[in-house]
Length: 313
Ligand code: CP
Image (tube, rainbow, N blue to C red; front, side, top):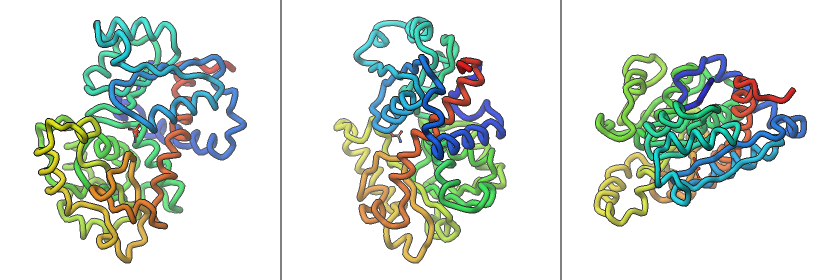
């Protein structure tokens, strides 16, 4: 059975196939309203979400299926082994999407589930976001993906890890304009570091000014992981991070005279990783990118259900 814990175990052709299906559905959504009748997606959340929850639930509904939201903290996931709860859950739904704190719990879920599992974001990977991002880039350029230059500015994290993995596969030139990452950090991943060090199309620099000169697209994300942003026990640490990161902010001065498109996976912390003016700048495709979560995930669900032979023909 195929799962999506990250983007490491599906082929380049499969990634291209998922993106193509997403474009087809976005172009003609009414042709796909009966794609997943009587199919149910179980959505398990241990962390907060707006886009992932809304887009998967709306997406399943629009494909003729349904989705169930399960709050980890309001369920018996807090009382017992994850594997037992998942084995039960997977006997009642046709696919599971989980947003969890720890990737090792995603791996436990993959092992225990009788149905396909999608990682809805953990501390190491955000594969659904990366699929959406490349889908969005395809919409805003005439270039093939292997001729596009994407600059990711900010901190290396789960979002940049998945971008690195997908760009490496598709040949997109990715420049990570970030401070040197902490090799012991919670998002550290050996395959990602190997891609940065050895792939001809992946590069790391601390010089954001030179990086943006080459950009077709510039992209940023929160500098502090969502579960820590409002954590009062980390006030001093967060303040230090925000000060250290200010040279990497996307703002009007940095992008003056540049024609690149501006991306952000949201939620936005305006005045930190991006200036409020750039969020609404004519070059911004941020809200279109966020809305594309639904289309990209519909393409993924179509592909995944077909792989699992769960499409009702
Ligand atoms: N980008 C993203 O995953 O948004 P949410 O955290 O709101 O789901």
